[in-house]
Length: 455
Image: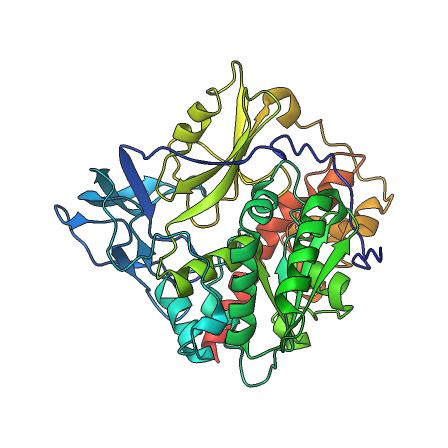
């Protein structure tokens, strides 16, 4: 087996894939669903409903707020209780639509059958029609970044797509949602990949999977051989070495097609690649073939002290506490709740935060696991430099942020940081490197935007 990986940096944290063998379970409906209007990169969605309106599963409740934006659809049927604010994964109160759940009535346009629809049976699906349906269904990147998918499929004239890469790496510890999707929904995922290739007008596709998911590698290799053999499409399952953060777009492009994506504003399509998550491929299949907007997703709920870690097909807007209770409830003692995994997840202030489009995991870690050690002076060991997958100097970027030297921070390419946490994980002095770099990166990006706006 030819196993590939990316060329710079990387670490190997403990996997803790506790829910690896837990089949996806359909989560119970909440009594009340909360829909933040910012569930994607770009402008927040704009409400198109008002208090007292009746909605069904699949009803649009908020339209895209700009070009880089995405509509939001109700995942429940019931009555709009109010348009207010609610705490989201940022920890702040943000505009949201709150719906009281009544029954489970779906929009009649959604195909709820289990029949597998094939691209060959739908000659009406031109590349333009595929992209249009994806856009109208509110599909965004399901790996956490939440970039509107239709935009990736329509690159600027200066870039030409040559292949689609499905990100099935799932290198973040604890999370198993993508693995379970591959094991249980492989056929739909492959049709989704075919739709993405057709929409992007390319004939080459790759599926990058780490070798700790051998059952998925074997299953998808077998299915790809049957599905694409003799067709115009060339699709290859690429086994990847276990290495974090291989799920980063630039690291995945490097590992799979051996091309280096330049510093921002360059993106993967500038070197010919369009990268989409496994969950996104499934959402594309459902949007295009089943006329089903994006209103539910697979989410892992996990933690060493959790009684029954699991994977759930959950309607967006469901409070996280509902899923935690389905896993046996919040463990006794002090715990830290994360939206996402321990490396890149965001610490939450409330168990009432709703599941959104990018919530691939709800992770609970004990206070003992979460407690940081006292930072010590930097000893210039350069472990952070060796671990950085972007080839940066984290110790320097952290110090520049600390002393507010934004001009040099920009010169040292602080905006190239992907915030993976590898530097902080490997630091023997327990320095808060990522914390400082995040603050500096945010400030420098603000300065760049302000400068661009003046031109």
